Each structure stands twice: as structure tokens, then as C-alpha cells.
Image 1 (tube, rainbow, N blue to C red):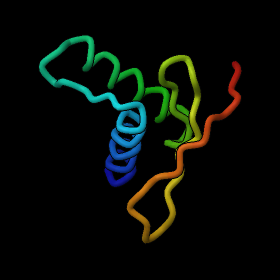
Image 2 (cartoon, helix red, strand yellow):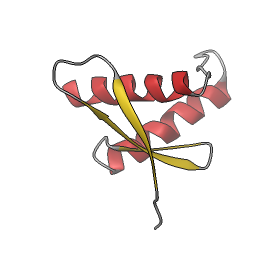
Image 3 (cartoon, rainbow, N blue to C red):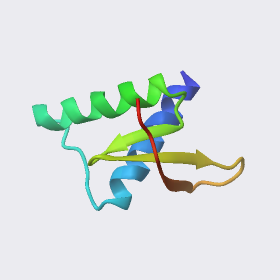
Length: 75
């Protein structure tokens, strides 16, 4: 459960960095959220795929902000 909270916080930070947000009343926004979450869960909560870019998002113990690093990723 705690890990899921961190994933949600990282998704929020990623969207905020792109000046974007999710509207829970819109189906397409909820689909985007589930796609972001699914990708993150498959990659241990470290990698996030958004707008055709992959990001490594890490947090440091005791810090509230996240470090977003563009990353190379291929299947």
C-alpha cells in the first residue's frame, strides 16, 4: 500500500513538471492515469512513460520533492 502512495505522488510530480493535471471526471484522463500507473508498477515504481518520453523518478529519504531524470528506454 505504501508503495502505491509513492507511485501516485510521483505521477503527480511528473504531471506537475509538464504543467498538466488529471481530471478524475474524464475517462481519457483516468485511462492515462492507469497507463502511467501500470507502466510504473511494472518497472518497480522507478520508470514512468509520459508524452513519448521515459523518466526515472527518484525520491530521497526526508525530502518532499522528486528528482525527474529523462531516461533512455527500449523493449
